[in-house]
Image (tube, helix red, strand yellow):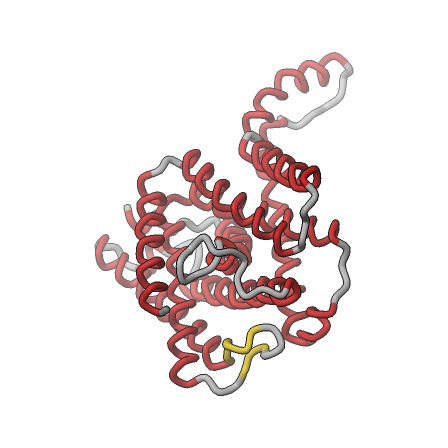
Length: 313
């Protein structure tokens, strides 16, 4: 099983790295949307949505939302002449509508809030999470929202901050996941949330958090040395401590994101979200941590105005 997991993970990682560095932002966003839509199908299976009309509506609405987000800037540009005309015709002052392109960034806040609440709920009352009664509609809305926000964060991270930043984030979650697995195997004794995922340990979580600190520092020092520029100059906007803290918090959220999807699977009575990936289960089994961590990581970069990509120049 471990060998099969390693082979599948290696192939997936290779394809992802090629996509990040070779695809233009629009095509990368399209690729991510395809992955998310496969995950959406698995989510509907987990919450037992079998009605064809409901499934079609779910997919149509999430695709529509993706198109709206992707075309937001173009929409503002198209509306600008009309709004200027109306402002002049009816004598009111209107700020340039094109300056509203950043409004969508605020969507990251409810996404982050959701994952923080999920983390605290799982940490404080895992049994309550498993017994929580939610209608199928509410479960559908939750899945729709977290899938859409995960896609948006990853797409915009690549579009606005470049391939270097995107691959840093992806590798951060991968490194943390690997560290958690092997640390838990070696030293794991205390269960992190036995009611939800008996295999995860507190020691494994600390291993993941420790690995995120080491990884972030190694990347900063290595890239700085390769470019021949000092860290103080390169990190004038965002301090090293800020960057490391953002990496650690992203990993922490990713761990509980994994637990959140484990709780959903346990409620559904299944081990994996699907069987598409040999040795790994379904797509959601592979992107659950990324979906949870991406909004926080992207928001951190947006808030600080820091681009890791600049380190590669």
